[in-house]
Image (cartoon, rainbow, N blue to C red; front, top):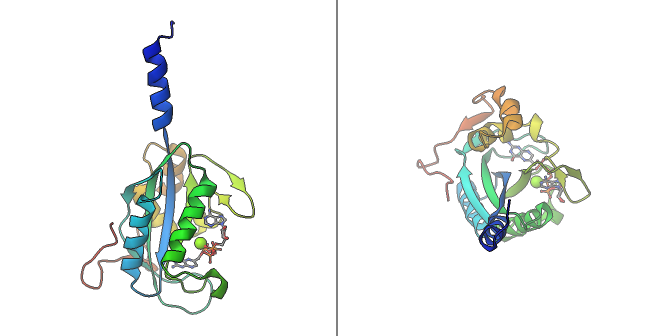
Length: 188
Ligand code: A4P
Ligand code: MG
């Protein structure tokens, strides 16, 4: 096959525009929970190279682990991420957003209450375990508050993920669909 100037520039265009799929989980149980989630998702979509393509329903969830604390609101979202953006850079951006929403890790108890928690669940097919980042997120498969929302937004073409999520219940007493104090939602 001959490679013409136009096929070369098309290839360059495709590479520049290639994206990868990432999934995140967001949780809040302090302050205006729905507003924290809404604002956090909006800020995520404003990170360079990040587009929020799907957001799950909002669930009210019983706290798992840590100290006695208020119920959480949890959502999951699917992102399209520019190929040039690494998962480490995305996580750093997510942590910056958490700080904007008043999160102070140094004052926190592990698994204690927080205004906004953004966890990176999956990033394409990437796997790693470093001090800063573990992919897939190490505790996601044990947590209904992560998996139930994730199932709504996961890429249906991803057979590996679809198979894993197929078996989880639609909802459970500890993870309930949330219609808002006044019927609001966290959709940005
Ligand atoms: N880190 C490593 N891998 C990741 C990743 N894939 N995504 C590192 C995000 N962070 C990752 O996280 C601690 C460290 O994990 C960071 O330094 C980061 O570099 P953190 O957000 O500072 O603290 P954390 O969230 O309190 O810790 P952890 O262990 O990640 O907690 P989880 O697993 O996020 O659980 N109950 C309900 N119902 N709903 C909730 O949302 N959340 C938690 C927190 C506990 N119980 C909950 C909920
Ligand atoms: Mg976290």
